[in-house]
Image (cartoon, rainbow, N blue to C red; front, side, top):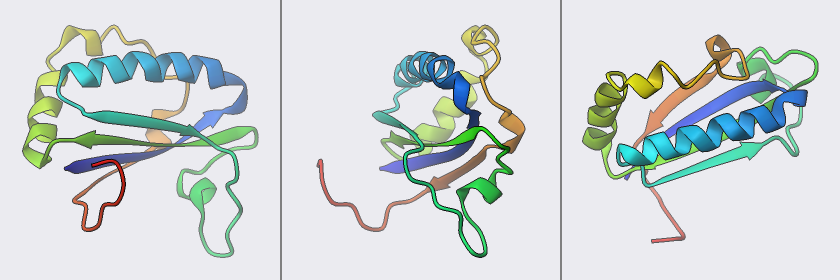
Length: 118
């Protein structure tokens, strides 16, 4: 298992646009072997004393935090899919994301402990 995680600041009034954009993206990623995607809209994101999700993405007033993760079979599958996806014409027709993509955070992780579904 390989996990790609993102933290994204999204204008609060664009929740439906984000949901539609994310649903479309999930279908696209599934075509390339992504096993699972979870998109989470801010419910309780407290301000921290030194750092927090909002500061990490320079969130502006009215923006909500989205936490999303993708589960891939393994690191090699993720990188192979990433390369192929950028050659897919659908990437150019997906439309503009309903957020400032320059401020999102992406990180990829190798699990060291997993509990739950499998």
